[in-house]
Image (tube, rainbow, N blue to C red; front, side, top):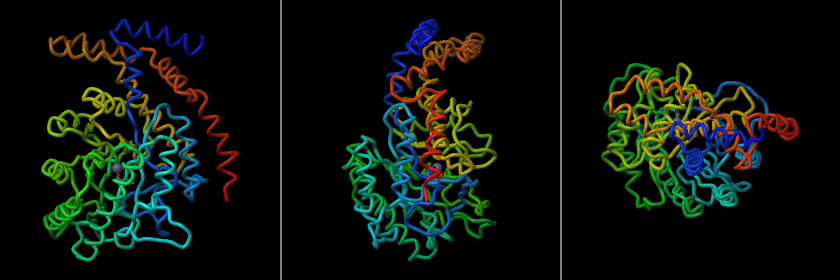
Length: 416
Ligand code: RNT
Ligand code: ZN
């Protein structure tokens, strides 16, 4: 049976439970994922020589990570060739590309340092999202936007402002909104002497960053909370309560990273509550294993739950970014698996008979609700996925990995 024939058969079966597969695929095509550049080089970037800091960590020593902008771009291209649909790339300020002999510190970064990225995106019709980088820098060792050292705090405020200008530049160049996400690593390893003052300073720093004029139709700012970091286990300045309240009062978005909550908290359950109070919100899709480990996203229950809530609340209300960094496996395959898996989860959500499920709940028919939910799991979802891949000109499930292995052999392993 051809992919097309399998799809036609699946389509008929889905129709029986009230789902129009063509419509589902059209809806899926509209959803953009923001592909994080940092899976390609273990979050190292190009502007500093030092290690990754800030309480986040990549583990593993798989060879062939990208070490130059050219390699990273080549790898992004390869990965995107396996991902159906048109998406965005997500950059960090630390990925500035300087001309020979040139260098600028974080507070002096300018759009010109990101020209190559803008060109890259434009040539491919991709959008760009952006992140100031408040880690892996000599001035970020103790604290950044919450620093008690006024010079350091001002340095990082200027960095945030510089990044707003760069975000505006990206939006102008690509013609798409640039989502700019602020995450800082500030926290304490041990019992704080004062929980309040660092938060008050962070609040003031954010106010100062956001005080510069910028075009809100071009740049959508988000703030990302966290529960704890490595070496900052006892206190996180930018906690969830801090940012959720800050975002609500200052008309910016909350960014929810699925790895930044207690491991047994259901992150998907947060979305419908938050969207009663915000027009839009942002996400970092990651897979925490026991802690914020940033494992590659799988097509698992958590991803399906999250995708379901995205689709039910209206996918156009979300900026969906990927955020994982596995250094123990081929990085192209890590990127590809995560992106494809989350698209599968979104497709799975689009293929649910939402109206029927809602009606069963509203009429108190929980017996049938449970039974239908289980029946859905047995639907020929894979046939629809293969068809979607074929239609979008990307390799199907049973072929992309062999091609990726070939790329490792022919390109990655030949790199200096
Ligand atoms: C860290 C945050 C943050 C980073 C990236 C590199 O805990 O999740 O989003 O992972 O910005
Ligand atoms: Zn994140």
